[in-house]
Image (cartoon, rainbow over all chains, first blue to last red; front, side):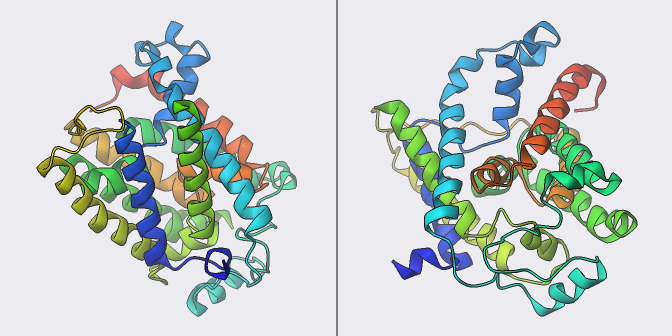
Length: 186
Length: 137
């Protein structure tokens, strides 16, 4: 049991992700979470505004169940499988955290608590990170036709060239933000 | 019964995303700074093992639980969209430290502010849908 409670090794994590993908394939579905954004917009009536949302979103209702499950899974892991150790980050990154003006990580927090709270939404930094950041995720993943699950994991595994191009894009954007834009925000 | 199975697979996914720390803003920053093998290890193992899975599914024409042969569609060859959309997503991935799957899992972990990120993501998708015909694909 201890093995499951402590943070998982990356190799075991990779195996578990493929196990999830396998279960979805055996259930006749594809592993891709960002489709849920399109389906949610369609469910909300966006089909009246753009043809992109005029499709049988009900065929994606399984995805809403999967999403609901993933929220429950997060709750279970957070409440009943909490590691007693602090997240094991590299020394180089811990130094960079101070440069960014952030606290060192503490036990029970997988994310910086000084960033992930509603007070941040009252700051320019918080609005940029969460509102603009979220917008770019929703716009970019649907434009690219997939996110980390659909392109990086499913797509690359299935040797899809468009997925490789998308993953290269993920890193162009991510590296640009991390190394050039984020220092201006923090 | 079928409905419950998707919820159960989702629960497994949520636990995996949390315990693997793939939902951690710290881990995503570390990845984009090339300071740890952690995220590369997760994705690398998943892709190699996933490739084996797809190979076996195709070669042996594995069937779904429902008895139909698993159909695997190719991704549309929209290279411009993949590169441009991918880069736009990459900016947001680094900012929030989360991709779509982890966004939902983070809510379950009690990070309520992420609801704002999800709402913003839905607005982003809505805007993409509206502008789709004007964008290069």
